[in-house]
Image (cartoon, rainbow, N blue to C red):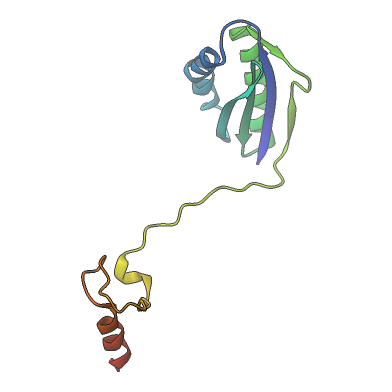
Length: 138
């Protein structure tokens, strides 16, 4: 995986206007780049934005770099590059927050009995009976 990272200062207009413009004209072009996986445009404060493009291959990153460079320079001239205006490299660590699949109530394994001995309100039954029946089964 390879990335292209850029920072820009907004000279005219707003960050919100820049985001709308990127969504309308830059993102559709990035979808056409072989190996394109992700694009992010972030408001980093003080009238600046950062863009991050992720690509599966170095060739895709190079093509995405040219496309983003042209877009920021020509299609949307209100941006001014902020040093370092461009960084490109291989991603060494990548972490995504995974969401576990929902688990059915009965598939979650044995349930522990509450000390109060009251029925489990979520299941509508007394868990002690369920555990006793499960342990008595051959």
